[in-house]
Length: 106
Image (cartoon, rainbow, N blue to C red; front, side, top):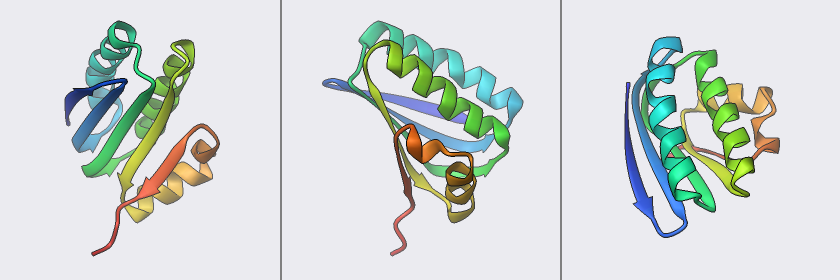
């Protein structure tokens, strides 16, 4: 699992790749949190386009970043989820926290 963080005016975009499990989620959580705390973005975008596997730690990763974004008066958007990951996130109620989007099928 890796995360590439890109900074834009008032936005942080995180490109996640590989597998998201308990171990990998804890490794990237700190770097995302540090970016949020130092930049105070209006929007955090989590891009799941290159994620190959996700367990419940992916839900925890999104929920925790949502809570942190609330402390800086920001919002969250999750993009490019696989159909399976999208279904899990919707079942967990994450669409109530922010925008959740499935991968576009071309």
